[in-house]
Amino acid sequence: MIRAQAKKLTLNREAVRQPTDHDLRRADGVLEPPILSKIGSLSTAGYRNRAPFQAGPFHLRFEVCPPHQEVASEYDSSGEILIVAEGSVTQILDAGPRLCGPLSVSYRGPGYPKRDKIGEAGLLALRIGVQAAFAYRVEKDYFAGHLGPKHYPFGVLDDAPARVVNECAQVDASPLLVDGLLRVLIAKAAQSERGACRGLGRPPSWLAEGIQLIEGSFGEPLRIENVARAVGVEPAHFSRVFHRYRGMSAKRFLSSLRLRHGASMLANTSIPVSEIAFCLGFCDQAHFTRHFKRWADKPPEAFRRDNRPAP
Image (cartoon, rainbow, N blue to C red; front, side, top):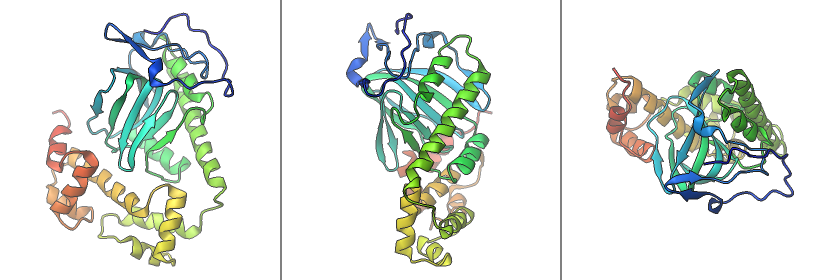
């Protein structure tokens, strides 16, 4: 348990030592993390007494996991923000594993399978569900519709993560204040994204046209080469620029778009898998099943069975 008499100190990046997994100990089977007294004034003394609660479009809950546990969340139609308070977690993504340490922030959009492996010292984290409509609006308005998972290591978002965790740990936390703090965190993330792209210059207009074409035609047997030619550039150049500005290949972007829509159709409709495959531009059911199993870690039929809404 976390000592109740946590002292709040201001952030001093030069003097801060980021905690490692070894900073988190266990006693009698219960996580006993130390006080992160030097990181963003973090004080989570009240987390054990804090029930899950709603704050605007956000649903928040503290989560404690033992070391080495593998968490394979069920399909979730909402987005998710994860703020690590203590310990670490490795998120399993299409692009490979991603390690998230103390006071890092990660985001996965609606429809992304959420598979995590807890670090050797366990995990104390604030898990925040984001309503799908709000998540899609944020992605469109602040992140140029970028659908890929995002990660912001310690310090990138200043003290915004610590402020969110501190407020949520209070038994009498104000949902209105938490809502505002999370919107500030999102704004800082968007500002960070713009800063990362500033050195690249303004993206060419044909890139936005290409993205719109992919988003509007992903249900067809679309080829990236054809998209590139439709906007008047060579396919190799289109692919290079797309990856430079979007952080993923155009082919992965298209595949992710299809699979996310496929997951939604499986969970919310009774349309046969073969028809879903056809609607999403796959060659046949076997082609769709192969890609979907790699993406969701289970075949479409099992995914549908596990994620049917309760009657």
